[in-house]
Image 1 (cartoon, rainbow, N blue to C red):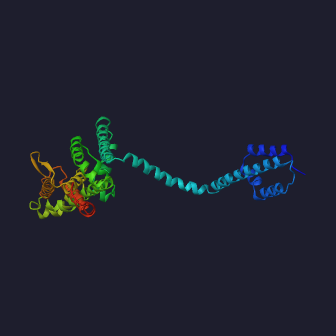
Image 2: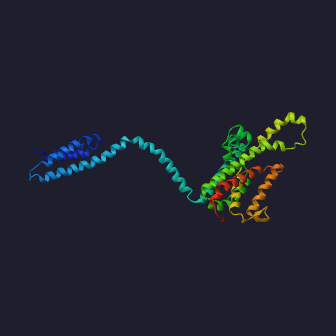
Image 3: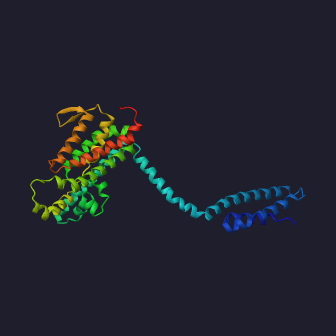
Length: 335
């Protein structure tokens, strides 16, 4: 007995309408397909040759859908694997976005400039709130998290301030001077060493600046400040309070990080002429040497005023050490 054509067509139509996982697994199993193929291959009727071709095509359609549903089942059975891949895809997406934003080296410089300007706006907003609304919450927050000192960074364990302080400028003139110097020296440096090494040198120089400030004012300044004028009674009564007063001296600004970049510039282009003290044009290596030694002298003699000159020294020394150990082996000539 041969099957009815209309019945098979109804089965086919219902198959297309109800293409679900359970029905595909039942109708497209290997057992049913082999049984149907064996049945149609044993048919000797010449009159039903066209019908047999139709049945064969029908089986091919079923086999194609079976393969498709096989992959669908693998997808649903391994959905946990695909969910685990979402995290890696998220990081790869963030990496692609950052690569597109900082595809050009100049964008890294502009990003650093923008961060410094935004942090300064927060300082201005804090002063505005205190003067107009007697609200010091924002200003206290900026002082706690964007300045570096022994008390704030070491004793209170706010170690992140070694990073945040290098982007912090409370005064607009301080910001303008630092950003002008940074903009002038950063382009030749980043073109020579690349954006990754440039950012690394900037951050390390800023951290070196903060460490130099903290160690110097905690260890050396109390011993250097008017030791000959103090008496034994003064040392017994006020030496501890005198030392703690220096621990509270805070520092902020990108001067140390910029000094590190300028030092690397002097190492890369030592014969470039730079204006020193607004009237002398000297080679870059001599200009930076005089600048760093001058700041060190003012720090030791305590004639630096409100300028963190020892921070400049720390940033410059860190930049030079980074150049000496990491940049110089990969640079074969000066540009």
